[in-house]
Amino acid sequence: MGTEIPKPCPFCGNGFVTPAYHQDGRISIQCRTAGCEAQGPIEENYNKAMKKWNRRSACVLDSLRRQASSEVSDRKS
Image (cartoon, rainbow, N blue to C red; front, side, top):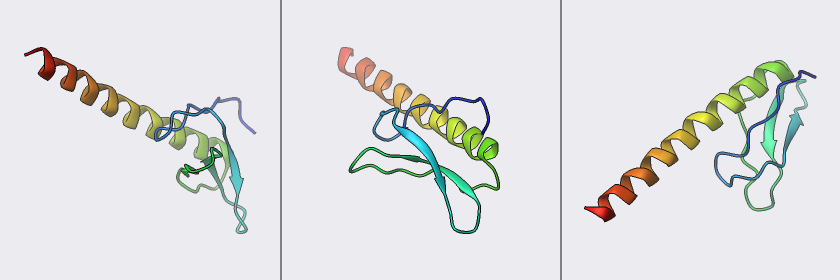
């Protein structure tokens, strides 16, 4: 496994994410929080799966932060 640490789930925010090993030998990163179970892209190896999970997390979280900031600004107006 690689040394990259998974970012929290972009949907529920929980940090309980682990590799999910598929029958065809490929890997994805999956949130293990009950009721969420979000899954990242399925890749050939752990490093690729982790990089895509972390990149997707960052994009979604940044989007949510911008949306929340915009809503706060709208309320102040």
